[in-house]
Image (tube, rainbow, N blue to C red; front, side):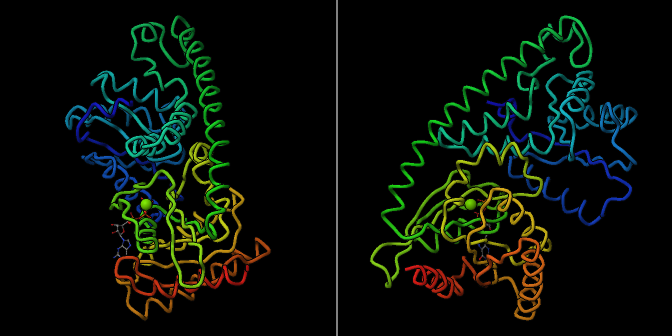
Amino acid sequence: MSDSDKVNNPRFLIVQVIDKRADEVAVANDLSETEQLIDTFGGIVIDKFIQRREHPDPNFYIGAGKVDELKEVCKAEKIDVVVINGQVKSSQLFRIEKELWAVSTKIMVWDRIDLILNIFDQHASTTESKLQIKLARATHMGPRIYGLGKTELSRQGGGVGTRGKGETNIEFERRQIKIDQQKIKQELKKLLKQKHSRLKKRNELGIGPVALVGYTSAGKTTLFNALTGKEKEMNKGLFTTLDTVVGKLKTPVFDQPILVSDTIGFINNLPPVLIDSFKSTLLESLEAKLLLHVVDANDPFILEKIAVVEDILSGLGARQPMILVLNKVDLLDEAKQDSLKEQVNEFFEKNNEEADKSNLRSIQFVSAKSGFNLDGLKEEIVGFFEEKR
Ligand SMILES: Nc1nc2c(ncn2[C@@H]2O[C@H](COP(=O)(O)OP(=O)(O)OP(=O)(O)O)[C@@H](O)[C@H]2O)c(=O)[nH]1
Ligand SMILES: [Mg+2]
């Protein structure tokens, strides 16, 4: 259980370093996504701390002077968690946290990955996803996982980067982490083997499977419910779904149902440790015959998000035929639909030139909520499997 669970509605401070050449709009979007993540976690964003600098500081990521300011804000605002929104080294996070001991030893300093891991922790319900998070956490946090430095022992010794008693402690903890990781990996391997045979048996009972994939909050679970008649939880927050669930889509054409799976959503800068740990959860998508890439058609960053998902999928080797589902069309006017379709087509033409092969079958505008064009989508799915017969 993480430290964060001990605090109700923790008070967050976001720290963002902006590179002078950074794209302002992209930075604003990234920041707002981090705010949404904090909201999903159940935290309150009290303040944002934005710093423009040429390069991150090697010691503290933010400059040493800024650390003093940070202390003051943390004290005045009774901050529980500081989130550094960027590519921060574990040692930098630790150094900032150590500086903040002057204010309180309870303050935690996280990067975006820690934040995502803590959200995942709240949503994990199966042995498998719990183990996957444990593994990702061990890999990402390193010695920070033991609350290193919070013990008198390492405080006497100094902690990261200094010699003495503390270092022996760190070495010991590093070794322990490796042993823990090995154990978790073995357990996961066992679970994966069982899952493989379960999947194989299950897939014989139906047609498909079809896997829903897409950016977090695109509406995958809502669409899954609409297609299969299930009632899985959907939520405004990000990462509502962590474990893969399979449902049945019954059609008048086939005797057997078409199997549909709903899985974890993707996000920009999804840490490789998470992709790696969640590979077996994503197995359904990898083994699917057909992918439905679900997209929020109203998202101002729609193309960027499509690109993130396509990148992750091709990184995983998932290049199956795909239907692009532009969801939430109930919120979109018709003129916008046309221009959007054009943009998306252009994107895939360019993308597929690079991939040397197109896996995009069609683009469907739907509303999982109102039911708009779900029949059209079902026809497309059925059409695909009819061709395969
Ligand atoms: N207006 C509108 N809202 C929708 C539609 N489909 C989904 N939503 C809303 O979008 C939000 C996210 O929906 P989910 O189905 O949980 O999204 P998801 O892709 O499963 O998200 P994660 O599991 O967190 O990755 C919820 O508030 C839904 O009610 C739609 O067709 N129209
Ligand atoms: Mg979901």
